[in-house]
Length: 432
Ligand SMILES: NC(=O)C1=CN([C@@H]2O[C@H](COP(=O)(O)OP(=O)(O)OC[C@H]3O[C@@H](n4cnc5c(N)ncnc54)[C@H](OP(=O)(O)O)[C@@H]3O)[C@@H](O)[C@H]2O)C=CC1
Ligand SMILES: N[C@@H](CC=O)C(=O)O
Ligand code: NA
Image (tube, rainbow, N blue to C red; front, side, top):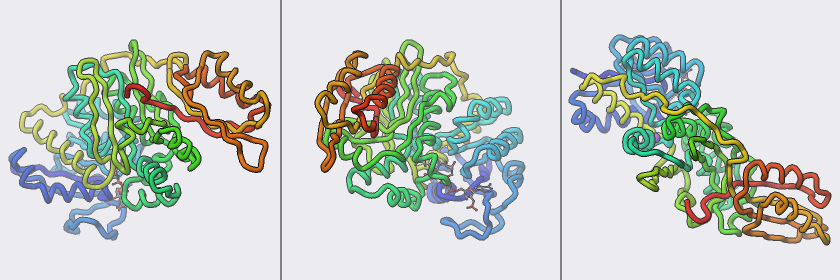
């Protein structure tokens, strides 16, 4: 082949990184696939915008058909974001026999199954490594590196923006809004950062990971989600005092064929390997029955790290082209999806309660837990200055989610309880 021609949908943070890598690593790309890679067309919204990379003016277009229906383009790289309109563009690109690389987890979490089957029907590759944990080759590791194993647990920090925010709040005492702005300026956050801070971006990534790791059709709605927008300095302060670090953690576990997938702010012991993953870095811990513990660490967001995954997917497509095996790598799910019920989901919990500082208050509270067989691992009780209230902070031993939810309902009804201020999952005491 004389050259591979690629068309880009989008030239923002990730798209500019893709163009830079294609230019700067051209010799490596040629060595791997035996021909040059050329950027033929780039779809943008605003033709007049100043760009991070230099491309000839005639390469730019605002007409998507110049990319997805262009007979000279072999591979479409989708780095524009969005869901419904983008889905339509990619369906048309695949039907026009273009291979596709996308960094779009919003799209893959919802329409991944549909798009992969359209790709297979059309003999095309659809790769999406950059959609989960930016520059970490985690999808390839699950699909290829761990293909022979049965994965039972994945636990990860899969959102760079929230990890950046929590790190700065914890280590520097920075204010939430200020650090969010910094993460946006650095190009880590989504166009609408609500999906980062409310945990939806991480939930999308966990749905993709669970699908591949457990070989089941996991829907986005199957993922329980709680974000970090309500985390306060006080919560972080009490966590530290009890020896924990607060992280937004995605958890996917399988037991007896049933799975749980969740994303929530979680307290980890400071000695936990994920507690040391800071700033925009991501890490995914994967436990396989045969391999045991593995952990994948790297930058989860940002221009060049994310673009590395995109261009590596492009190399994968080009290698498949040389072997004439495009469109054959997607594997249908092996198992029927079965979700764990709340009676079978066990975790430790942190609770912060304000209660009346009076005789019997504490025993009223503890009896709610003991009636359901839930015991405490750690307790702090501190009087609140100039009031007749006390702050009680509890870390429970493992409890079923159904029991814990019932306890919470009853706590709110107790006369001695002023307010349940916050609750968080606690993970990783003992083993990871
Ligand atoms: N930023 C990151 O660290 C990561 C991002 N991703 C994903 O990669 C994708 C791109 O993200 P990012 O580069 O940060 O986004 P940006 O907002 O920086 O860039 C988006 C690009 O797409 C173009 N674009 C958007 N909508 C349209 C449209 N309707 N028609 C034509 N052009 C359009 C924009 O054009 P114009 O420049 O003219 O406005 C811009 O060039 C998203 O799916 C994101 O979730 C994945 C991993 C990490
Ligand atoms: N907004 C995302 C970007 C990468 O997926 C993040 O912060 O992780
Ligand atoms: Na990745």
